[in-house]
Image (cartoon, rainbow, N blue to C red; front, side):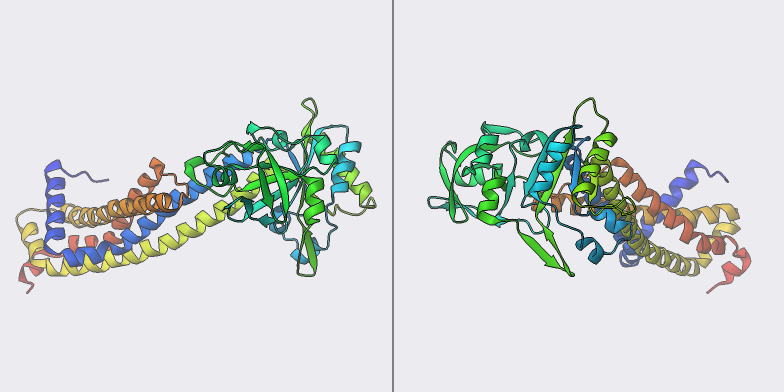
Length: 429
């Protein structure tokens, strides 16, 4: 590539700045598309990266070896299966969880959660004159904290005996605990969940939320699954010719057992329970943390790509604007070009003059776009708590894109200026 001297480079930058000052409206319109495109790239990157880090942390907190038994999942839908076909699968039941716990020797723990999946069970929680917003009501087994890595910071979790007796005891998430008992010890207090009264025996700690984003992960209470069935039954959502019950089963293998062996053990039990022949495929699904992360990678990757494409359209429009404005500038400055050529300026110097001027203009647009995109991300974070991430490479990407637009779309007018005949240029009126 042809080199230019530092003095010429400084002169070109100075001329570009003069153009910005003297033709503010034209320069603003020139770089508007670039500003919008870079703003979109940086803003969307900050939000998608923030959400990605938050969800990954939440998924990873479930435990790498935890196996989830579901009726179906997004993985099935992503593989092209019809939703109506998946909804016709048999629903999971508490008996499935009990059978897995009794017959799968490779498992250290099997957990049942009711009210999660399908249509969540939601109710307000009351204590005297205080009440919460509508919260998720989960019915579970006594090993809920171990399977889902939940810390009980006050009191305790309910016991297997309380589960068998259908005891009306409740463990509060952090949100209802703070709403109902802001300055008092909640342990032993009575609250009302729906139309039944429960005794508070524990409070869970704050769930991880990278970036400070509150996805409602603490908006829940947990009661024994037997008590849940007595009060709510097993709710089902009907749609597309099928139903989805709010049942989820999670299992953790023994430490010395390979996860694949544990999954094979669960599959064996479930196939026997569903009376499937050897040539029939599973009518249930086993999911792991790796599979959930893989599904999220597909979703986030497709979302990020679509946003980049949309932002690139704005950059394309901005680039066309740059090319049009710079072409007009070449025409208006024909005599100036002729004068520079007459006093000894070479063609490559004229080429670099207009090429770097276009790049400088779009780089200014890139800096403005980065600032506005970052401001949008930070503003959304402070307004809603949505997590953001502003990696350095997103700024570098924005500046590279903006400068690249200037070079690409400034090439035509720059070549046109460099090829002008000096004598004809001096005669131009």
